[in-house]
Image 1: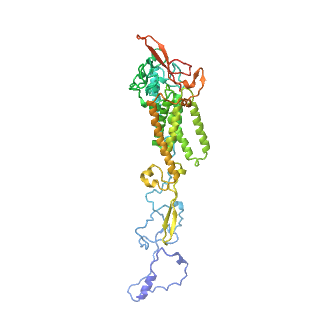
Image 2: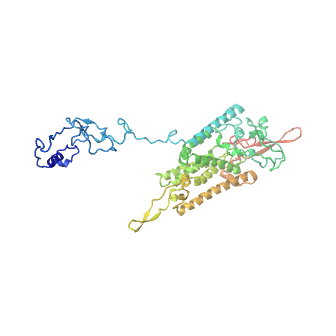
Image 3: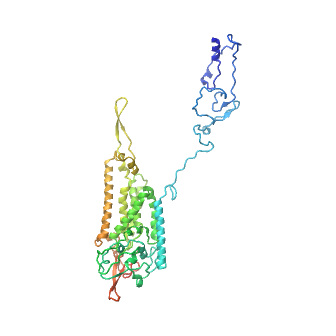
Amino acid sequence: MAANDYYDATYQKQTPYHDPLDSGRHESPLPPLPASAPYQEHAYPYQHQAPAQTYSGYSGYSGRSHDDPDPYEDENAVPMNTRRKHDSSTTIDPILPHQMEDPFVRDADPRKKRRRKSTSQQGWFKGRITWVVYVLSVVEICVFIAELVKNGILTKTPIEIKPAFNPMVGPSPYVLINMGARYQPCMHNMPNVQNSSVPISWPCPDATSTSGKDVSCTLSELCGFGGVPDPKAKGSIHDKPAPNQWWRFIVPIFLHAGIIHIAFNLLLQLTLGRDIELLIGSVRFAIVYFAAGIFGFVLGGNFAADGIASCGCSGSLFGILAINLLDLLYTWKERKGPVVDLMFIIVDIVIAFVLGLLPGLDNFSHIGGFLMGLVLGVCILRSPSAFSARRASVQVTTRYSGLEGTHTSAPRNDEGLMAFVKHPLAFFQDRRGVWWAWWLIRAAALVGCLIGFVLLLENFYKEPMHGCKWCKYLSCLPVTVGGTNWCDVGLLNFTSNATTNGTNGTDTKRDLLDFAIGRGVGMAEKLW
């Protein structure tokens, strides 16, 4: 029995997963098997059958048959069923790396090549869409079309031709006043209007001349939208109720004086405005846009000529231009050519302010919009990276050996409103002193902006007779051309005409200087 155990243990079937190092050993062959075992009735001949197939992935050794047990079999192993089988009698080609398939990816089609997802490109209607800019532009275009239609219905032509041609190629200023342009007599009590000693005749919305029935309308008919209380002769500056069409600080943003006016504004709005909306987001862009536009009209209502009918989104765009300037200063070190960008912005600002000095233009709307843009930019834009960088925190740790060590953590970068909402306390950790000082400046700017807005509104409504004597020179040049001073263009002037009206009363016509044709007496006209 011991001899049989010896031979049985020696001549077991050889597994295909043999040690390749054994092929180099030189050992003496074993003695041949005996014909029959001396202690058993049956013989145990050694018979070894060659496997019928081999795996192509294991070219260094022979494969095992399908019925042979695998000594390394594991029920959790990944099946290698994706490899092709070759006949052992044929030559086996090596599998190149690009031909090998990942056995762990079972849901992928091996016939399809993997494609890298292309990053989305920013375009007019690709990537992040600037909805606020597009919606505002569409609304302004629709409103301008309505202006032309209304001017065509009232005056028989879509653009103003009589009594003078509108250089902006647009509707009459009387039509714009009737559609909501900022016009001070429609908004509050004014000197020489509410306390006039004689009745005042106002131009009609459909006026095409400076005399006759075209100048026989009331202030209520000129203002429209349900009208306003008409001033009475020998009244008081404090008469109640007073005109109070306050929404004329908002509606003029969507009105424009002509094709040239709206074309330039839309060009800037669809280029620079779109970039700024992508930079700060739609919500903050809308806040800056409307706040700058409204503040510009409020500032102009306090200091501009009282007879100017102002409209347009120029004040809003000046606020956007201020945001662009702040962004340049915040990212100065990150830009390739910051000096060139700064020069372009300065040139744009200077040209716009110089044009605002022309007669009949409201430069205070530009100034107010730019100032509001600066203040709101400081408040709502993220702090400069030089201010928002946190201190590197040093932590003391105890090692396994019992010794204490220091660990310096990298500066954190959890900024923004969402970071504050998720982790309020962590938002203020490791802040430097310059960050706290900058936040005090931002808070003071916001408070000062609100206080200034309230004071301007109070001055506009409660003390309209008081104003700045020299502020008008921010919107005009003291130049006399053709006998007319540029700073007098847009002021309310009155010409008394003695007319017999059954009571021997006196009628007064309201007069605005039209510098373009040199009229000193006549109907109201505004240069855009």
